[in-house]
Image (cartoon, rainbow, N blue to C red; front, side, top):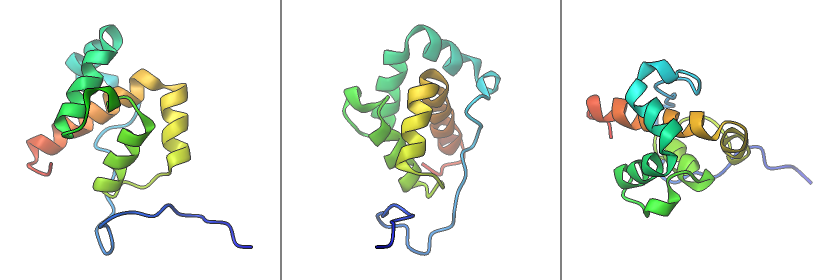
Length: 109
């Protein structure tokens, strides 16, 4: 029995591999996002969900982070997404919002 070592993806065959625009602990890259994440993470979650045309309640979920990674062909796994959100929920939420903002600025969203 062979273990599955990669997760299936939708529409990424032949697509270029991308990377996160900022690291998970690069909070100083956007202090506004960082402050919003610290003092009102639910608001930040809703902003992320809105940016991705999803339900507001999904913003801080593993599914949302995984969907975003898959959409932009960012390497990782569902397990890694779960660990990031479980261990560093505010940092990973801020990272996702910073990435969305940078891709918007590059017209890549």
